[in-house]
Length: 151
Image 1: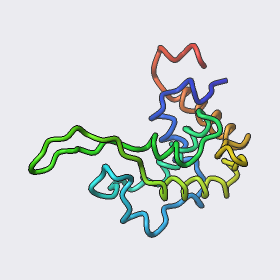
Image 2: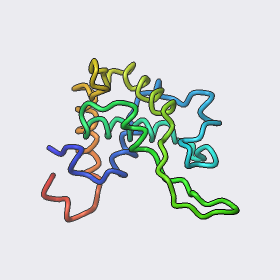
Image 3: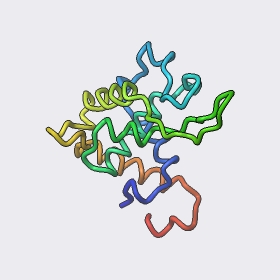
């Protein structure tokens, strides 16, 4: 049986985003929110919210107990340090905690993620089975001979 580690991440995230329940939907304010300090504009993709929720589900499953603070670091970027008068090196910036927190809360309402007291969030058995079953479907659909050993 294939697990989430056996398939490419981008293929798995796209498939899990399609499998997520309908209650995981973009809030009204998300159309205007940037994904972090390093961005100038909000995301333009139509399915951004479900893709980010699927990516968060995968990240929490891989990292185990993880908090929003570490996830903002993982989803951060780099901001250019140059301005008109000086040239400074780029600086690492964090991602949007509000987007991450809200998506995790929606996943928690669906029973895919749970809160571990004092440790952050972790994936429930239902969330793990969703990821693994979707990974099996993705692996069956992929036409990549180097992945045949996992089937």
